[in-house]
Amino acid sequence: MVLLTASSGLNIGDMIVQLFFFVILLLVITGITSFVVLFNKRGKQLDRIEEKLNQMSDRGQ
Image 1 (tube, rainbow, N blue to C red):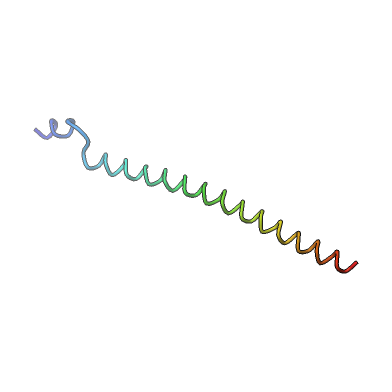
Image 2 (image 1 turned 120 degrees about the horizontal axis):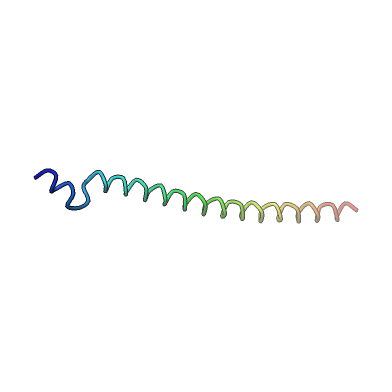
């Protein structure tokens, strides 16, 4: 009877493993998205800083 119930479908261990890997997949996707957004924001910030420095150097000449 134990063999029949274990092989008849997903047991709790299989569900835990699938949930674990699903969470890992979500974390990887979230991490990549966060990295891209952070990289994009940092680039825009550097562009703004460069523009301010250019304006300051133009005033000094």
